[in-house]
Length: 112
Image (cartoon, rainbow, N blue to C red; front, side, top):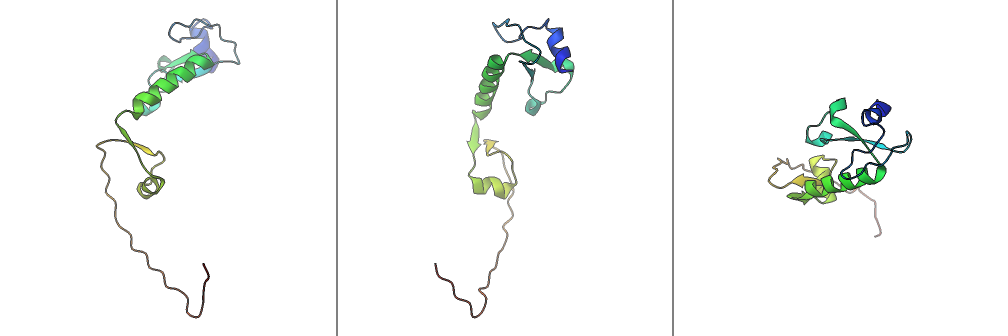
């Protein structure tokens, strides 16, 4: 499928203002609409980009995604069971408090 995407573009980069020829081993297949935004793996949503154009597009998409987002601390991320430390502002989560109890073993002493 990778080479088919390239072939559909006559072997050239689909990047804005870029018409670079793509060698079969030196290009990236990119989702036009990112999967995290509802894009699919359908061939109509895929494009071949040179490495430079793909990096620029990804950087632009990531910076847009960060606008209106909040960075969580590592502890908050773990408590919520999230993979990413970034969430959209306005998101709400219900966190149930967990009680922990620890009893020091009798007869043991510890130095700190």
